[in-house]
Image (cartoon, rainbow, N blue to C red; front, side, top):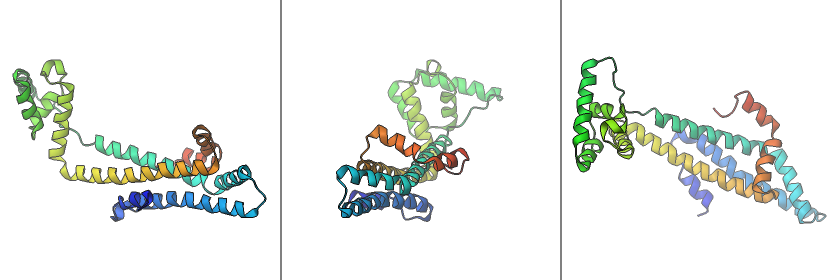
Length: 224
């Protein structure tokens, strides 16, 4: 099985991943298209290796560059959206207007601060109580005796316990996006090799040869 087949097999067949599959299929076709262009240039029988590469580069500029840059932008936007969805899963915020609740949180922090470290870990990372989570999250470590690392574990444990369905969807989305990202990396390497450019030259070529994509990006027509 080729890496391309592996990448595609890792994208679920669920209809909500049709966009991922469409991006993948377009990326997969790019190296194949350039391989065909190279074969056609060779068959002319009038070009040396450099001339063949330049002809393939001209073809890529006209037929491949814009689509490749669009997919780069789409994947980058998808990654940002995924991260935004992750950030929306948060621990409960403390109600600053409730004096009684504020005093309770203060007592909780004092209690947690006196705990042995092993008990802190058990209390804060095994299905932690929302009130305890709010009390620890709103105060700096010096007032809670809880390290930043343990605070992070506590918040992750709370989110896992209270948003299981959302977490499952995010993980599936992240895995599918990772496969598309690997496909993009593979396609980019193959296209760059086919047109004979260094990594720096390739990055410049991808932008300068696609002014129409720059305009689409400026107008907000891609990347959403």
